Length: 96
Image (cartoon, rainbow, N blue to C red; front, side, top):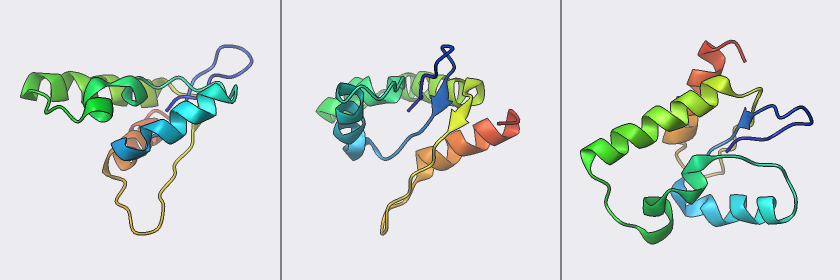
């Protein structure tokens, strides 16, 4: 997820798709989050993306993470944070 700062800055935070509703609730509470993965249909309806859709999704998530001003990494007990690790790596590689 991306955190949008006072000067339209972007940050990033991701978690497993089953947590998209938690991130949407933060948005609803006026936390300025911008993250395309939260609204990606397969994360909402459970549909199986095509290989091209996966590639486009990850290209976008990694680009968003690399452009972020803030990287907020959350990994709850007993969960794997595969996507979050990729995005954290992209943010770190971009010097964030």
